[in-house]
Length: 275
Image (tube, rainbow, N blue to C red; front, top):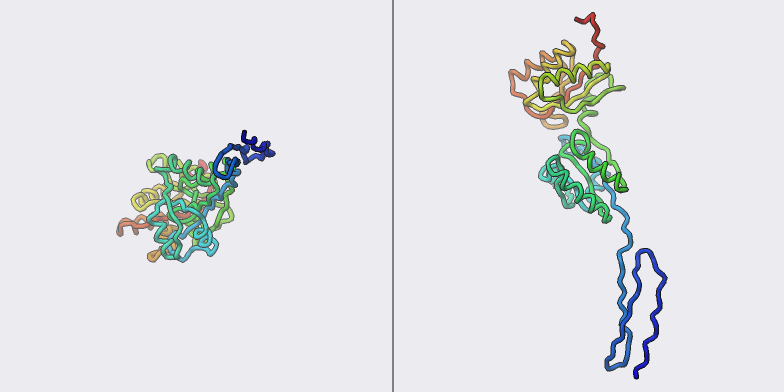
C-alpha cells in the first residue's frame, strides 16, 4: 500500500490569493504531489486620465510636458483621430489613438473607463485647444472622477484666452458662452441676458452664422467696438476691432471662412431710459 502524501494544509488567505489544491500521481519515481496554485490578479491601481491641451492652429503651440505625456500614455482619445495624427506625426509621437467625440461618447466612454480601471493611462485631447471646452470631454472627466480615476490637467492653448490676450479689453472679469443659439429669437434673448451681466463676453461662432451673430450683437449692444478673431494662431490669422456693422460689411464683401472668436466689452445695463 502506497504511503499517503503529506497534508498540504491551508495557507493563510491573502485578499488576492486563492487556496492551494493538491493531487497524487504515481509514476516511475513513486508517489509525488502535484500542486496547482490558482492565483487571482491583485487589485490593480487605476490608470490616470490626462486632459491634454493641444494647439488651436499653429502646431508649435504645445508644451514640452504635453508632448512627454502623449508619448508615455497607453492610448490617446481624440475628437478626430485624423487631425490628432497630424500633430503627433509633426512631433514624432507614435502612441495609439482612438476616437472619442459627440456621436460615439456614450459607447466609447465606458470602454475608456474600463481601460483606465485596468491600470492603463489615457490622454484626452480635442481637435484644438483644451478638452472639455465646447466638446464632450467633460463627460469622460466626470465619469473618471466618479470611478476613482485620477485626472491630471495638462494646460495649454485656449481660443478664449488667446483672443482676450490680444483684444485690449478688460478681462479681469469675463464670461465665456460657447456658441450662441442658432434660432434668431433665442440668440437675441441670450445676448440680452449676457448684456445684463455687465462683464466682458467671449463667444465662438461658425463661418456660416457669423454675419447673423454680428447683426444680433448690433441689435442688442449697439454700435460698440467689438473684437473678432479669425483663424487664431494660423497662417491667415485676423484680429479686427470694429463695430458690428463694420464687421458685417467686411463679411458681406468677402465670404467668411475659418473659425471665429468674438469678444464683446462689458455693456451698460439696459434701463427704460434707453428706449
